[in-house]
Image (cartoon, rainbow, N blue to C red; front, side, top):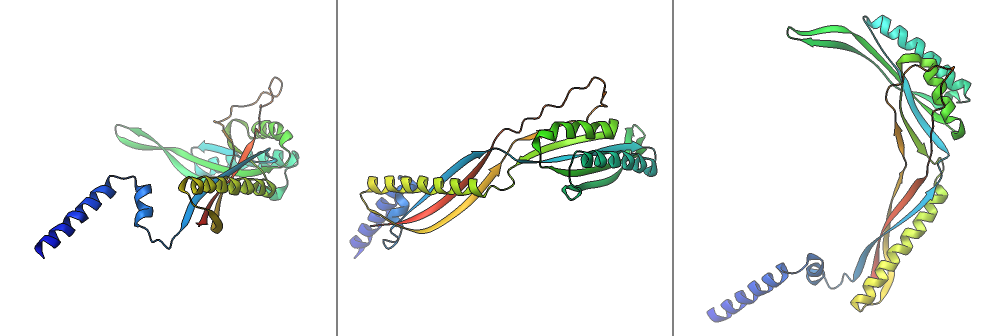
Length: 244
């Protein structure tokens, strides 16, 4: 009986050593249930399209000795900015306040901090549906807001990406199926029907960041160059296939 126990212990150590030295991707199927005869694969499909809409984030930032002074200056400039947006055919319901804040501003000296004044920030998001007018919209808004205008960012988008998502989805499924077929042939098994299919979508685009704008001289200014570029819509799928 003692010899039998020692023999079993030796075999256990040998098997554990063998499995530890193997790649986990090889070991896992050996340890899984023989009833789970499946192949798990992922596929990715991407389609490129041109943006047809942009979100422009801009606003004003004013610092004055008192809250009332800063608020008044910011309010006046922001009113002019919004009016310039509307004058460039941006609908009122496409303009949304993104942020409004009032913060004290301090100078730090050897004797501690000293209140310098107050800063008022007011920003909006404006949806631009005619991309060819984007340069004029930025220039006019900057001129209307004066020295305190800030153009934070532009985000290009595709308003309805349904058709591109459909194309990307089909490419992702074909990609996953090709990978599964290759794995099945290399393993000497026959690929069966899909058991489960899940997907994730990703849409991204270029973003252009701007620093604080200086005052514009209408008599000698150049138009702000803006390029929309292209956007990529990506769909990833995970498919579990039966194997025979």
